[in-house]
Image (cartoon, helix red, strand yellow):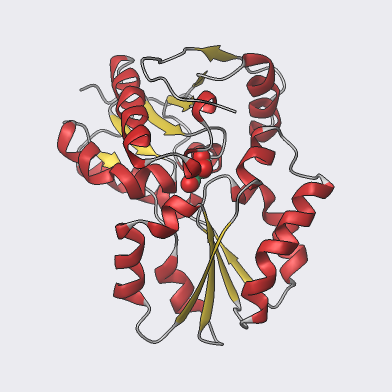
Amino acid sequence: MENSSPIGIFDSGVGGLSIAREIRRLLPNEDLLYYADSAYCPYGEKPPSIIKQRVFALSDFLLSKGAKILVVACNTASIVSLDEIRNKYDVPVVGVEPAVKPAVAATKTGTIGVLATGVTLSGDRFSSLVKRYCSKTDVVTQPCPGLVELVEKGMINSSRAEELLRKYTRPLLEKNADTVVLGCTHYPFLREKIQAIVGPGVTVIDTGEPVARQTARVLDKHNLKSSRQCRGRETFFTSGDIKTVEPVVQLLWDDETLKVNYVPLGGISIETN
Ligand code: DGL
């Protein structure tokens, strides 16, 4: 494995760009490959068996493109399949999980709220996180159907997003949560709206920066950090409709000239709606 090889990052869609942008900030000289599995998004409403098949297809693809490390920039995919990815592949693998531990450290009321997909909140990995860190903290969990789809369409400032966020944060506020964990990588793109709704007294936590730091640590540990002096490149791929996905990636990555490559990784027949 070459140090100059790229970092492979994937998500069910564009949400993992919230992780990728922090990796770009922290590791400006690395080449990044990003795969948005938008044709199969949302993972949060799919059976774990389908999510696993997708995750292996995406990992195989990124490794075929020379990825030296895999970053699973999706809580749902990490909750369902992180152990299996680690067992299957030789490269280091970094996953993401809801930031329960920092939220427990931050709360003053003793109640934290976690916004995530239904699959994440019902996964064993999430229950063991809660068991490990929340013996003295109350946890209010809230699945958020519909939010991921809005981010996938770039509708981050829409009134529909506002309406859903008010609905999903209300139970957390009613239970006096003063710390809200964004347990899905799509949600940081709604962060400003969420903060405005919950108010300045509530701390909103996401995992972009810690995952970027963890990626840097793992690269260091395996002597895989790029020694290149110039800025790295980003290459974007998607299984989704390029006409929909490309403008949203341009919006979220803040670069209206970037191109997204359409690479369908098929072989699984499921209904997409
Ligand atoms: N971005 C994802 C996550 O972190 C997946 C959301 C979805 O596809 O439902 O959970």
